[in-house]
Image 1: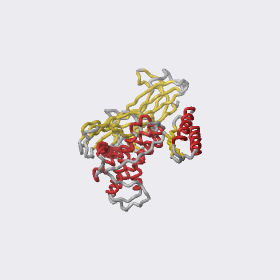
Image 2: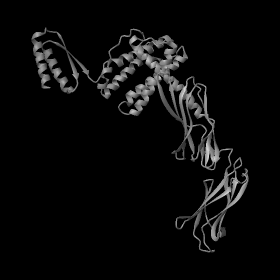
Image 3: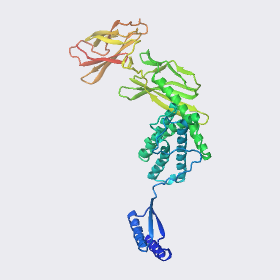
Amino acid sequence: MKRLFALILVFCTCFTFSIPAQADISIDVILSTLNEEELIGAVESAAELLKHYGYIVTIQKEKDDEIVTTPQENETNEGTVDSDEALTSPVSSDRFVADLTAGWEARSARLAQDSNRVSLMSDKQYVAYMSECISAEYDFINKYRDAEFEESVLAGYFQDYISALDEQFIAITEYYGKDDVQFNEYFSSGYYKRCQALYWINRKWGMTVKTENQETLTELITIGKYWDMKVSIENDLKAQLTNLDYSLVDASKSSVYFSPIKITNNSSYQIEYLSIQAKLFDGNGNQVDTSYLISDNSIPAGKTVSKDRTYISTKFETVSFTCTYGITNGVYYDQFDFEVSPQVQYGWDGVIKKNGNIADGQPVYSLEGVSTSWEMNSSWSKKLYVPVIRFSIKNIGTVSGDHVTVHVIFANTDTKEVWDEETVYVIGSSDAPLQPGYSKKGFAYSSVGYKTETTFVPNLTAEIYVNDILMDTITIKK
């Protein structure tokens, strides 16, 4: 600061004797690390001193964290920057494409203007810089937001393009330096959508740019074509998986299977890689298993890939499909993935359920007529006084069932110990299937008991499972 005051005094002294009266003197002040209030005060003091000698003093202030836009000459396009001038309705394609091109080149020019300073910019400076770059396009095309176009297709591409710009502006102004995930999501989404719109606009109407911008535009259009391929393929795969016509089929008492799984490449492009998995969730939304449905390579346009069945042995309540696919346009190759929930939801807890209800085409069993007692039994080489459970299994489903297993866990509630476990094959492999509406009786004797009959028996309960589904918990009565 002392040095500054010394320079100002020297400046005033020199110009008092060497500059003709009424000369204009301009002092450029850059506010950087110096205290702004002190610096302005010092310069104003110098100005007052100069004015005393009859000089006219102009003070210009420029903040170093503000980036000044320099107008760029447009040699090729004659777009019109937004003004109060009313748009001719409907808007012609020639006029709009000229403004779009001019806006794109204005952004390119603004990007190039300070590109060598980007690595040195603070977050605040970078936000200002990128905001100005995007605004350079807004200046030319914002006026078309509510305009009527001669060609409705072009109107659609404009809406795609302006919404892509909006996403990038939101990314820069709201999330840059604050939330990297949101910033990347908004900015990259806007980038690819913008490239896609440029690809179609250039393809249908053409964009003429300066020679130095041609390579950049060509690259963006190439990316846009690739992204258009990606969007076309992904939208179709999502629609197919959301509306997939599939079934969950009973395989045995311990498994079911998805069938069939069929996916067609309805796009006009080849899919280089395709993988589809089923994620299985329990009632709390926790993923309990993954089933691999389809994995294939080099699927040309129009080809269908399928799998007859995929076995599942984990009980679940809901399912979602995860798809990973890879594509190339000869320049770029990448893999993408997404997850969708099918409209038809299957679950399995021993019984197949469709959209929460018991599905048709399967045997469904009910436990009926349960009674308990203690009695002498000689089923195990020696006679014992044991608890016994009698029951009836009824098929309340729509098709016959060829396997019914009842598993009973006896527990001593006084000692908190398992007394015994017994398994009864009500319908086995050698038995006739149980027809819909029919029932079959069964019984389960414990193999643990007393050598003689006694009135002092423990307090026992029994958990009764039918095909691994807990049907009831009962108290054993004497």
